[in-house]
Image (cartoon, rainbow, N blue to C red):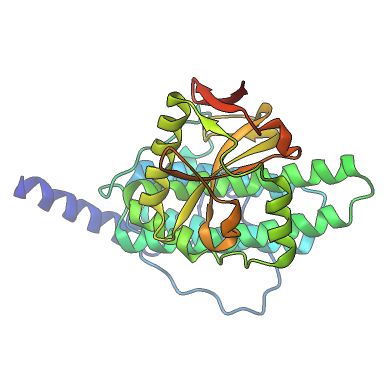
Length: 321
């Protein structure tokens, strides 16, 4: 085992040394097909070279999703200078450093592939690399979200606004898929990322909204199946966040989801949805306790829940008498 680990370290050092002088793919076809590489005028000082420690399979997985994000941004009908700046930032922050360590990934990323999730471990990515990955992807996701929000505000109508929003959601989703390997390898980073998100402050307006949507305390029951589902969900929530959380069941319109291997978003339609809120965000008088579970119920018409039982089947919630 010691010999095997030593060989890994030696091979890793060779890969790093070999790629140290590589700034970009040398092959002209690869360079032409690099969607993140774009010339932009920038007043910011170039970032110093950062040592990337990750397996080749992790590098290829990240590059493919970053490339998809860049292609989406390149085709977006938005502020071109800002979208180009984000693409260039993705190249400087991820593509170029990864190519330095794993030069063969540049050509491999152009080949056809079947997208699928990557289940990474600490053997796939170093701790410091995972932390940097998490920080940089979060920053760039914020930049893309801000660009998308501006595009939506400038849209001529609701249909155009929805189309614009979906484009930028796609781009941020690709970065989320790319960055997920850091959370897979180091689950505590996921908890930290959640805790780093600023809590929404309670306001008189938000309190009024919660109270308006809440049925009378004690008027909603939970079936055994729903209770098990909620308890399991909240166990995961508590493992993922150090903040005090409370379960919430609410009615959601047009629910959509997308995985790393999905080409498009899949729609689950409208339905009852399980989530959580920080306790500090909710007025205490709307927090119910049902079978020892602290929970908030929320509906556009609270009478739709009053006197009813929330049940579950196949991980889905429904309301019955």
